[in-house]
Length: 258
Image 1: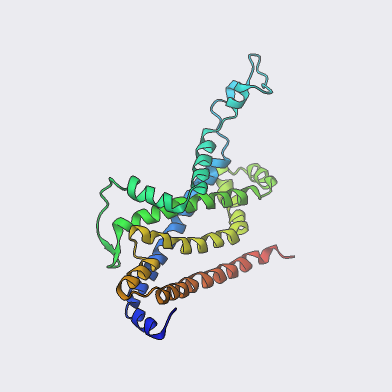
Image 2: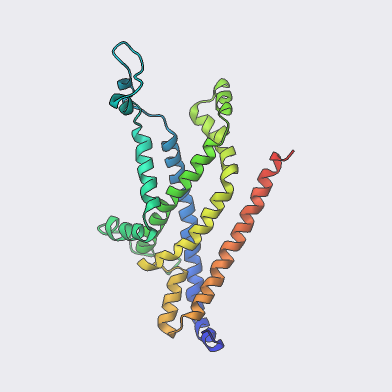
């Protein structure tokens, strides 16, 4: 149970929670930025139409093969295949396992510069945490972006081509602006999820909110009070974020109402 004396003792370490708050916000912002960029690349890769063995689908007289092994090979898209494998692996494995692989295996033999961000965040632990969260988030966001792009009417692509726009210009000026508006709600949910999932980084020594909880527990031998403070901090982060994004979503959808 928690007591007033326990809160008073825990409050002596409030600076740890302030540092954890700064670290959590930094983790989440960088994860969103790099995760979104990675997701955009993955989504475009999955929607690509690069078939280097397309010629195998033709017979000697130039007709398309209807079925068979060569037909399957001719339709093979290595770019889409690589992106699909990446997405399925990261969506089908636990986040904790991914974090440990990236920290202990990928960065295990890398000499990361050792310094402190903001005077207390250890960069050699913070960087692997950002990479792990961004790679995991990118896999989920890529599916959201892909669905958003596919939801745009194909007739708009044909209209863009008739106006002389290239595929890149069509994606940048026609498809993506509409797709982003459509996928804003699930992206908002993913952002809130990232804030909460960042707590897992305390397992590799990143000084976020849960790290503050374990440090306070070790100093005070109290666990209920630090957990309650952490709960309040997480709520104060996620609830306003959801409301702010919902506000912008309503603003963006005004033009759709007739």
